[in-house]
Image 1 (cartoon, rainbow, N blue to C red):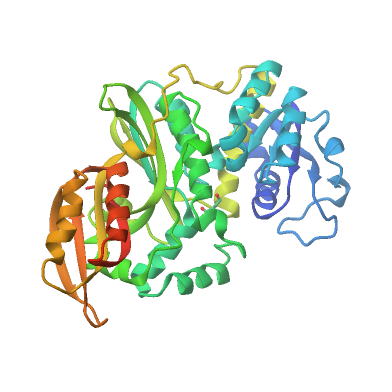
Image 2 (cartoon, rainbow, N blue to C red):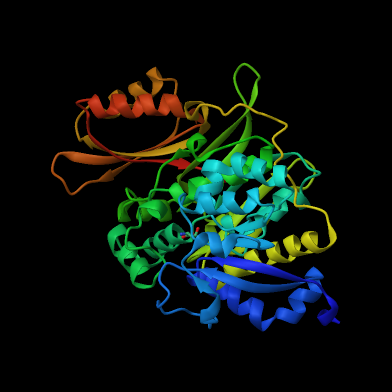
Length: 435
Ligand code: HSE
């Protein structure tokens, strides 16, 4: 039956971990994929940097090329798996401008230039698909863009970076330092030699921007996301979290909020947070991802699965390919950019949450009163205080949990504590989420 189906020419840009798996599965499951798409998908060019590099999939050397124009021009669908902004942006534009549909896993490109790419796709009638850009195999892009298109989303909160989840999970489970956990993640191939994009939260921020745009029908770029990474998290933070029934996770949170003057807007942020061990996100282990979406009608939904790796990410790319191929053969197109709501992006200082602060203070009369006074002067209400022995002579450790407070007020508290003669140092400030 599939012999009679039309054949579409596919270019794959990048034959690394994901590209190799896409090519392998397209070859091994050609008939089934053709039956689902209603069209055969034939890889007729593969763009690589080095023709002789070893690869995970067997690729006919005749279709390998280092010439991007030759790889892209005249194809039906281009799969972009190079990553980064340039030259990926130029290649994707080249394809879209010719009316060639694009399937990409490039979160950085979408979070920085999504509107431009959407416009190019709409102008030429091409599809732009990017399920693989957020949370690997987990179908959360489709979930927000299509399955939940009938609902009003109020909040998206998730673990969207596997590398940092692996590191934090190792620190929690094996009681190792951040540096030891990072080294293990690098040894196992989860973390890159330069781990900055993952550990400083940039990868998660790009994904947060994409999810926020979809959830709230508003353009949200990576520059709109307030970001804090995990490199300052210590073994002491982990131990204290565990002692209080919490775990620390790097969360991406995008939410619809009302400001004090009643205006509705969006807040998007990525930061480590304490979450109670009973929260389903607390059980997300290793390099797995999970995203909780709250819809006014649907209630709470949780998407969970493998957020990285060759085959899981290829699964997302292939689902997009099947959809794009079907449109190419029979008409129709992917959903266009939906930004009708144009909600304002709220200042991060207006975000309200609970905080937990650990201080090293002078162990002398009146110190707690001084510290409490600083919180009080900035309008931050204390929920609980505990004091612990410190091995450093003359000092004590004080942990303060706050009631819900404004981020800007908490920052002012931290600054004032830093200047106070009662406080030796602010050892950590963590937000509390998911209670
Ligand atoms: N580096 C990412 C992660 C995978 O660790 O989740 C690709 O986005």
